[in-house]
Image (cartoon, rainbow, N blue to C red; front, top):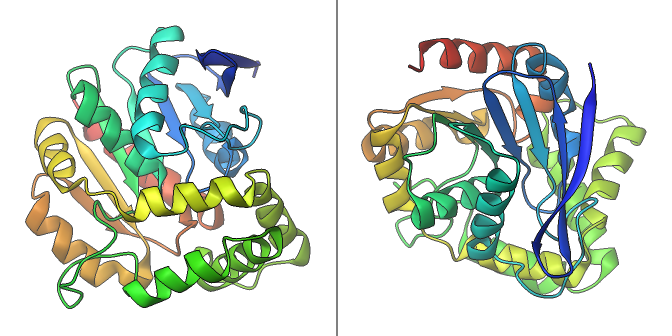
Length: 274
């Protein structure tokens, strides 16, 4: 299977790294906070047999240009539109993982859903913070998130510790091998800590409830959420996005740890989507 790698200029001096494999209906994958195209390797391997499979490093992630400006999800949504236009991608299924969902919802806020075939949103609430913590699906208690921002995302050592703790505690359900944890941390550290801090705050203060509701009513939408908050997330999404399908699987990185199960869920969804 031939893989094409390219760099797409989204503004002067800023290029996004894009990898394309296979042909057919397009699937576009956007990684989460400080992660890269590499996390979707099993999806690329599987779906490129039947689809044009595109993975993107957002700005300041992976092999894309590191920059001190535009590290917010409003800009990331605009960047996504420019990449899709440059690649002549028509009627894609967009996959957002974690904060990558914010990129997708921001794209929808700016450009609508007319040119989207379907959506797969992986383990991200449309609004991260809420004072109604008993009922809403949120990222976590405000004090915990504030501590992560102030204590960890202020220097490289803190970023390493933050990602290490998150990887072992939230991302997967089994014990990671040493080389697996090293790989995850190295993924994240490609984004400088001061950029990571900007992305973290931009993500936490986002509110895409309107876009989540409207897009799920307009195009076929699948939410895949982690088991550790599956009950809360499912109830929340069933109320906000009643037309969407909601499935629970694994931890935050379930598409990597449980790739075969995840890929089957997506295959079934794609078959049902008109």
